[in-house]
Length: 473
Image 1 (tube, rainbow, N blue to C red):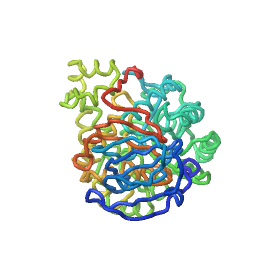
Image 2: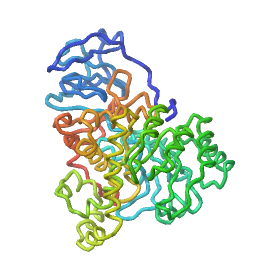
Image 3: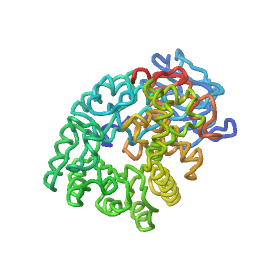
Image 4: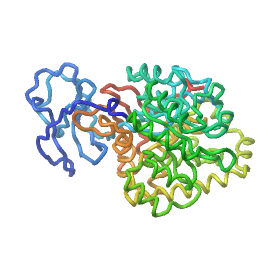
């Protein structure tokens, strides 16, 4: 993401190291914090155990002023600002707000999908759901309507309207190819579909001038069923985007185009490679180039897992995220039988297995890993729930520790998009965080125990058990 979107003034000066609850931590503040007078407009979150997006700080207090973390103080500190609002979270756990590097908004309503739903009301409803589930920043990678910039600016001006929104505008695809306009319900197709290099450059320039935050490319032949973007087109698009200081994220499915995309300077591979095992030369090329990788594990699992009626289908955490029409569909025995009998279902299972293995390989090799789910692109890719399921898959099946998964979904996800003001709970950064009743370092599924969500220093949601997706039906 362009640095203009992620810059916050640096406020911190490291003061000391203290021991608290067995964990080492920094007590940090601006130089004059210790002697600051009455804390008008200041909030102090006291006595919570904090994972700051990089490490476990133990039990600390967060001093928040003007939407930013001003100081991280040892628990029980006596030199905190007088007159501040104080919120005691003893026994609670705090993590940064999650950052979704690959999602979509304004494309679904109930069991239907299409660009007819791209309105500020629907986009805000989607972002409120992400927010309620602890995702405070969402990058919408393509298929955004012409009103994207206006909607983004309006929502980002008011934390109560939902998670912060950034994105790729319409994105750049292929004539008669990906993204498939008919299948995605794009009746007023916002995707640029150039036929040559000059057209690709013009498309990127137009999107840059419209104020997009990044460029999305679709490089996928849809299993051999559609034309794939030609190298001369994506090379020109990448080159033009970089002239405008815009990151480029490429949608792929197969291994075949990945190596040339990396060699051509693409910044982010926006979906996992799902047809075969990633090879060592590509791993090394990605590591050397600093290419980011977003696996979106849940994208294939979501195509069949709900038809299998897992026990967690009936948990409030998932049920509350579903519009009534989706709940009814998933409860229908005929729908489940049809979905599971579809020959494509086994292909999706196989794709997930390959994706998991490739993510594990890349993570072990030190390739930059981002966090995304493709939630919101279709009704079964559930905003909010998908992110917590993604974390679970990363830990249970891709070899991540709980701490590594949290780093990926917070500080690493923010860094991948060039944000320097979020993803970590440190002085000078945004006060975007999630209050949990259980420790996610003990069990990653504890990220679901959401009691409150704070964004820009304000409580904007919580507890999650009280959330209802009815506004999205």
